[in-house]
Amino acid sequence: MKKKTRFSVGDWVMNIIVWLGGLFMLLPFIWMVSSSFKTTEEIFQPATFLPKSLDGGNYARLFSNWPFSRWILNSLIVALLTTVLALFITSLAGYAFAKFRFKGRGKLFTILLSSTMIPFPILVVPLFVITSRLGMTNSIIALVLPFIAPPIGIFLMNQYSSYVPNALLDAAKIDGAGDIRIFVQIALPIMVPALASLGIITFINSWNNFLWPLVAIRQELSMTLPIGMANMLTGVSAGSAPPYGPAMAASTLVCIPTVAIFLAVQKYYISGLTAGAVKQ
Amino acid sequence: MRTTMYKKTPYFFILPAYLVFLVFMFGPMVFSLVVSFFNWTGIKSPKFTGMENLKGIFTDSVFWLSVRNTLLYSAVSLFIVVPLSLLLALALDSPHLRGRLAVRAIYFAPIVTSTVAISQTFLMLFNTDFGLINRMLGIPIDWLGSRSLALVPVLVVVIWRWLGLTSIYFLAGLQGIDRELYDAARVDGAGTLQRFFSVTLPQLRPMTFFVSMIILIGSLQIFDEPQILTGGGPSNATRSVVQYLYLRGFTQFRFGYASAIGLVLFIAIASFSAVQMRLRKESDL
Image (tube, rainbow over all chains, first blue to last red; front, side, top):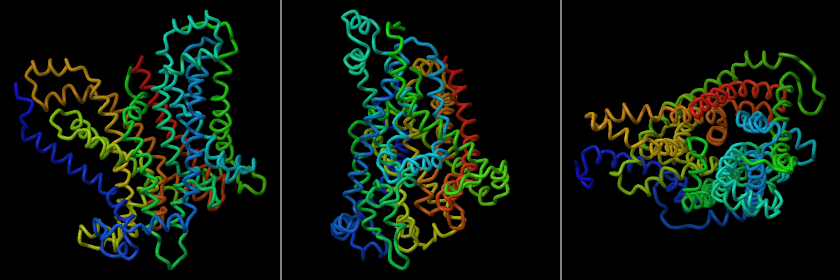
């Protein structure tokens, strides 16, 4: 038996490659943050890793030249609303499919889950027509509604509901509790880890969502962060230099919350992702 | 399985999910399939034109270019990201890796970053005159303005963002392999490489398939990265199928034509998903 602490040549090579690759992975983060503190002059000079001095000008301009705080607020409202509604809708459905016997259960479940086969981009034209006919163009609600019944969420909740012991449900029933009370007071608390996983994933997806808000939102004040940011660079009038500094400040601020959430609760995010892939 | 006295309750419980499904997924999907047989700009009433749109896209050279680009994105994702992420997962699973938590965080964090923010960052990194990449190479390469090179930055962003995600799946797969299989192979005298080829790879086969499908289905829908980095240019050299759908639908408002592009995309993705679901059922049950 080899000693565990002894490094073979292969182990050295592995460590070196993985860490070098890690530097490459970190590079965009370093560049993003470092550029956000560079002055405009510095940005348009040959690239350097670090700024000469920490200049907060890009952040100040970001909030004064664009409605950036409004975009943050819009993004927060959309992401939180989507998350809360998705948790409510998928937990109800997933639980019903796991714990009730009813006519058509299997078929209804399969149909609902088969919506994973629908690629979102093909829905963009009809969703645009529907929302504009309903007068919901530029409305935040239009950004929320298409994403509040994610099939992966229903699948996850269904799997997790089956861990709720039937004996517990039957006992509550004998005590005279109704189905809704049993669901809220007994099933939901047991499903908290699954709710956490789905909640984090839904929030992050919504926060980063680009294609649908790009189509549905035209007014600057109704934009979410990704759309507003994209507009900062593409909306430049010909001849003037693109505002790279403020764009990097915006990118930094947009990435901080999701990366922070991920680092803090990696376990839930990863278990949510792999729930569909690993056999239980 | 428990029986209930209230036969209506389960239907009430699944009702919200079904409403959303019907109104925002299934309904629009049918709508989109129907519209692809019409000429419609959204203003005048739609005119039925049969197969005109489909015929149109099949002779549309820009459409085929976008198909080629998209398939290239998919192929690179499959043949670069999948093997790389398997190797990464093996490293992350190894007890000899130093600073494992930090390595995990560094490789996984890109998954949750905004595609727009990251694409803008790479837009600067690849800038001809003041980008870091040309500075390090020492030559002023026009990455984003060249028809042959513009695909590179897009692919770099794709690899950067997807590597961690797929290695998470492989890591979960590795941790699910029965340790006794390795012990048995060791008793039989199998070395590290032999154990990898006779135990690890065959055991990971279902996961490899699953990961490949996820990557394939995801990359066929690529939009954000080329949209920010190149806007599809120069002269459509990086335009993906979804970008072309967006261009026809929302800058030219040719809804019928855009929907026909969507129809082709739908058929491709639905058939891949169907294969994936069937195979998963077979391996699961």
